[in-house]
Length: 116
Length: 114
Image (cartoon, rainbow over all chains, first blue to last red):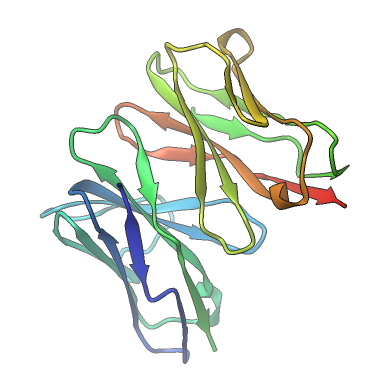
């Protein structure tokens, strides 16, 4: 149990376009979902926390207008990178926290974004 | 401030050697959680262990063992008789009960040579 999927697993896009990444909890309801970004050979950095039905909370230094997060249901959160640029190329990982579970996040497999 | 330090950036060992990955954390919370994850080249994080702050018992799972010491704020991970398949980046993370956020260390890249 506690499986989280991400789609797509990789995406290549042109500079200036927008890209949407989906994060789904497949067999549980997630009160909270988290989005991380990982640059090559670096650690995971939390970008934002999203709760179902409310606005996401962004970490300091993360542009909320550039990284749009929508958590429309207890099983789906989306991250849209708007007007992507090459410096947005990264590995994006989502995680989900299960309802009534103590502090444990279940991680998706990640989405590799390359902006040309 | 909350922080996780993994001082070892990269470790190389020869197969069958034992290796210990260090993790030191900082937090003022009395209730917190510690985790270890493995990240192979595919990128997907593999959960290894979770420990809460009230459970200082050491844990052994096959070739893996963990030593949690609150007195030194450390949560070290030992792989016994390492194998090539253990080659990966290993992350230690700290989770707090309030925000449910995780703070990751910078990771230790382990290379096990045949």
